[in-house]
Length: 86
Image 1 (cartoon, rainbow, N blue to C red):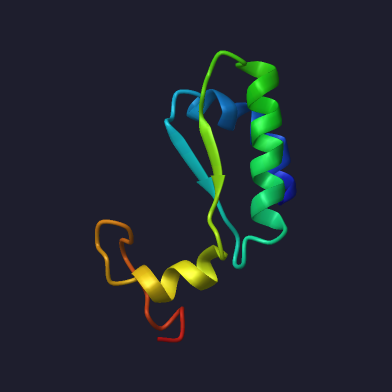
Image 2: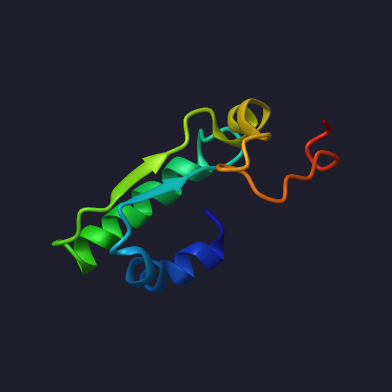
């Protein structure tokens, strides 16, 4: 995860501690996404153990999700086909 994520994690826990589900990802969800999810979950349990946020990692990351769901406006907004090479 980016240094800013680490610096802001306490604020993120406060902001999202009442969220039902929080999904983390990176391009392939192999390193950064899972690492960020683990860090967030550890801070959440330490700071707000009574909360039951379902912390998830997007399987296959954005590389898998975007080609499959980029046309679904209930899941994706402001899709930029040129950015994704489509």
